[in-house]
Image 1 (tube, rainbow, N blue to C red):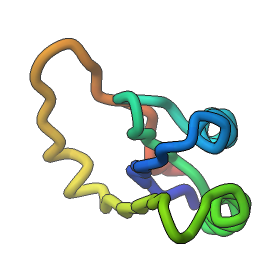
Image 2 (cartoon, rainbow, N blue to C red):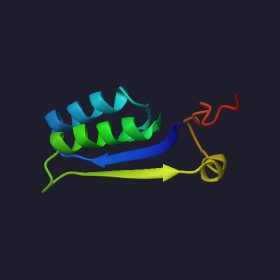
Image 3 (cartoon, rainbow, N blue to C red):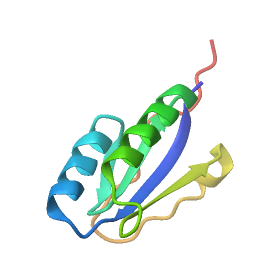
Image 4 (cartoon, rainbow, N blue to C red):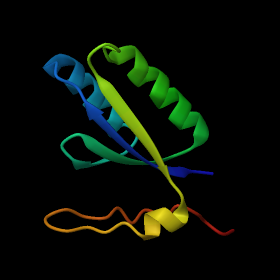
Length: 93
């Protein structure tokens, strides 16, 4: 089952930031310059985190991972020129 994550970063080096951006685009959608929303499985999350951990400089860069439950996701409010990702989180079969 997929879970919904908001992932943000603060990276000063352009080369590292580009690589982190590129990796995050493989897993989610950019919603702001340094913020991505990812609807991914636990295995994908672990794989992504491992990749990003290897890319960044642990002394100067930071990446934050926020897991949002369905209730929290339903309460996202948006103002201005952006969108709310409406990908389905759960499917009933």
